[in-house]
Each structure stands twice: as C-alpha cells, then as structure tokens.
Length: 363
Image 1 (tube, one colour):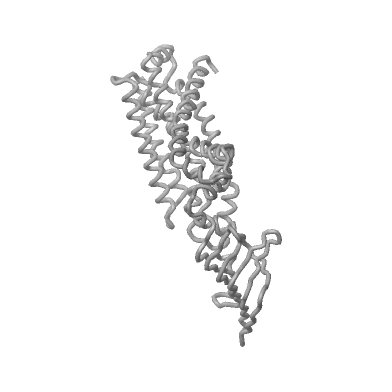
Image 2 (cartoon, helix red, strand yellow):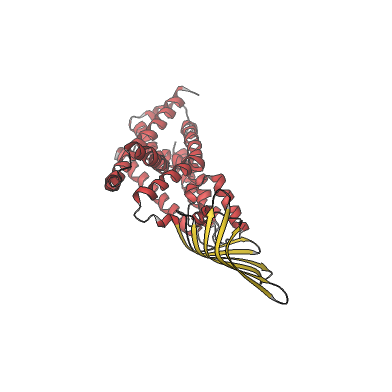
C-alpha cells in the first residue's frame, strides 16, 4: 500500500468516525431530554444501570443506523477538502487514474461494511433485546403492550392448531384456550380450557377446568376435568415474537423463527424476511455511497464544499426515502422481499456507475 493510499484511508475512516461522534451525542441528548422524568420516577433505577442497559445499547443501535449517513457526509467533506486544496489535481498529475484513486476509499468501505455486517447480524439485535426490555420495564407506560397477547391463533403443524383469547407473559397465564387436531378437514380431537398456565421448568402447560372431545366415525366422546398437563410445540416467547420482535433476534435465531413459522403455516412472513435481508443490503451500501460521494466531490466546484454537501445530503435523503418505501412494499403479502430489500442499492448503483463513468471520462 502506497503512502497516498494510507493517507486517504486514514483520513477517510477518521472522518467517518468523527462524523459519528458528532451525530450520536446529539441523539443521546435529545433522548435524555425526553426520558429523564421517566428515569426519575424509579427509585430503584441507578445511573450505572441506565448507562449499561439502555444508553450503551442505544449508542450501538443508532451508531449502526447513522453509519451510512456518516460515511456519505464524511466522504464528501473529506474529498471536497482534497479537491479545494488542489490535492486531487496533484494526484491526477502523477498519472494516477480516477479508478486507482478510488482504491483506498473502497478499502475503507470494506472495513466499514464488514463492521456493519457483524453489528447488524449479531451485536445490535442482542443490544436491542436488552434495551427494549429496559424500556418495557422503566419507560413505557403500558407494559402490557409487549407482554399481553389477545386472540392468538397458531398452527403447530399440518393437523394441529391452538387458540387463546388472551395470555400474559408476565405471569405465564392465559384464558379461553383451545387445542384442535384435524384429519383432513374434519375435527378429530379438541380440548378447551378456561385457564392455561405455562410451567417453564417442566416445559408443560397446565389446563384448568377443561373439556375434552374425541370424534370417532360413529360417535363422540366427551370428558370434563379439573386439571391436566399438555406438552405443545410452542412457548410463550413465540407469542411475543409473532407480536413483532424480529429486531431483537440475531440472524441465526431469526432464520430459525422464519423456518419454524413456515412449518406452522403462518402465511405472511415478508416483514421478517425484509429485516433479515436488509441486515446485509444496508452494509453493502457503503460501497455505493462511497462511489457516489467521491464522484460528486473529487473536482473543485464554484461554491466549494457547501454545494457538494448539499448535493450529497439531498441524494442521501433520497436513498433513505427509497429504503423506507421498499420496507413498506416488501412487507406486503405478495411482494418479493429479497428484491425490495436490494432495490434501493440497485437504483443507486446505477446512479453511482453513471457518476463514476462521467468523472472518469472527464479525467
């Protein structure tokens, strides 16, 4: 690696992390101002606990979220400064092509992409789980939003289905439970209970005040009872995940959940596929955004850094807009989530290639 490559790579990464260090404290200050009164309501909540369980994971989440924006802004500002100081002209005069000039930028983009991939797939989901649990305990006014499920249907396999009118994960109790087994389209067995309680140690459900019905070819058999135990292929955690917890799951757990849900016959899982695919597509955008920003700002323009920054920020907001639209459209039942997750990258790749070719030919 040449001295020039080391110089550009160091300044590139330094600019990205410096931009992050500017953006993240702003987000933290805004969040503290909104939540400080809620922190003060809890006498048992310590300052160390707030930092460790909430703000450390808050910084990880928003640092990862701001990384594409920081990459874009930092790259434009750094490259514009090189152009304004005529350093780019000096580099070009040394017979270094625009393509060769891009090499340290792409090395830096690779470092950022690998870092973001690891964060997206493993680190941030674990942090989200801790942060969301903290919010549910100390910040959200309605804790039941994350721990109370109503009118829950779940198909356990091709021939068995359960229904619960409501279930509280706080005390592992539910009401108006039913379990039904089918043979073809006809009911073969059904049990209903007024109350159901989950025993985490034994992995069983206790049914109270139940009524059991066996359907035979020539007759039905009905029995009533006080208590009985059942082992079912689901846990209360499945209730919360179906109520949306995909951001709290590492990618291996998210894949397992999607596969299990498909076996259970849950139809529309596109929102979970979008979450999974975007964990890869967003880090890869580091290459695209880097190419766009360098192509936009490698020449000295009238207006200096300001005009480059305005163009770059405008394009960045367009990228965010396309990304948000893709999430909505990709979560629809008949959509192709893989294509929609990569659509913003495809569109902006075309823009990046156009800007690159234009800058290369002008050089």
